[in-house]
Length: 225
Image (tube, rainbow, N blue to C red; front, side):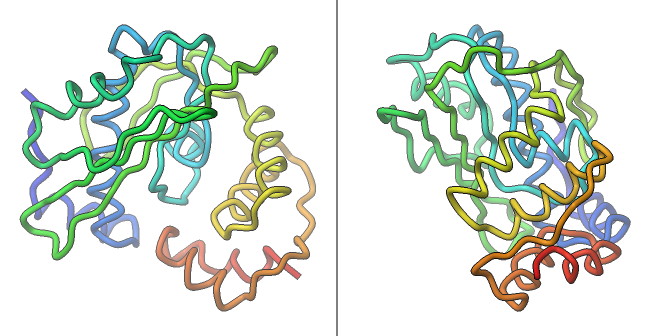
C-alpha cells in the first residue's frame, strides 16, 4: 500500500532541496499518477515529454506543474476520462476537476487537497493526439527522492526534447520554457544564446523562483537579453 507523504518528510525534502513544500508534494503525486498511467493498458502507447520529464528523467532542477505526453498510437478515444476517474479513485486526496477529449489533445486537471497545506494545488495532464512519425524516445526509469516508486516508461530523448522546446518557444514565451531550453543546451553541450523575448526580467524572476531551488536563481539573470 502506498504511504502518503507526511508533513515532516515533505518539510525535510523542501529544506534539503531549497524549495517550497508544495513543489515537493506535487512531485510526489506526479510520480503516483505516472505510475498508474504507465501501468494501465494504455501506457504502452504514451511517450512522456516536457518539463516534468526533463526533471524526473534527466535531472533538471526545475519543478514542474504539468504532465505532458505524445502518442505512439491513439487508443484512448472514449476511454480517457474513465481512465483518470479509475486512476484517482483509490486516493481521497485527489479529485478530477476537468476532463475533455478535444480535437488536438486529451486534457485532464486533478486537484490535490492535503491537510497540512494551506491551499489545494492542481496537476494538469495534456496528451497530444498528433501521432508524429520518427518521434524519438527510449525506455527510461522515472523516479524521485520524494517517493519510493519507480516507473518504466517511454520517454522522449534529450535531442527530441530540445527540438520540442524550440518549437514551443516559437509559439509562446514562458519563463519555464526558457529555463528548460538553457538546461537542455547544458546537457547536450550546445551553446545557449540569451533569448530576445517580450518578457521582463522581473516576471522571469517571479515565475522561476517559485520553481527553482535557490542555488539556481543566479541562472535566471542570464536567460534573456
